[in-house]
Image (cartoon, rainbow, N blue to C red; front, side):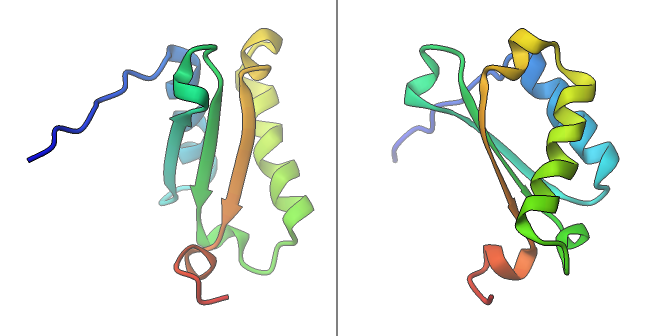
Length: 94
């Protein structure tokens, strides 16, 4: 049986995930390092029904507003991408 590598997320990522959970209660969140995390860069995914009938650009604006509110500028530079999906989009139904 292969062992899974457990990644300790930096404080700024856990702060961001907590803020997103507060802004979008019940959402599913994931954060993963990009390029093995060597440079401390992360990609975040958020799946929530809150995005139903919200266009992609508006979703991004909603989420990046949270990023800007809770992270310092130098921390924001390490969030390289945010994926915003509804549960149906995540499951490939839309």
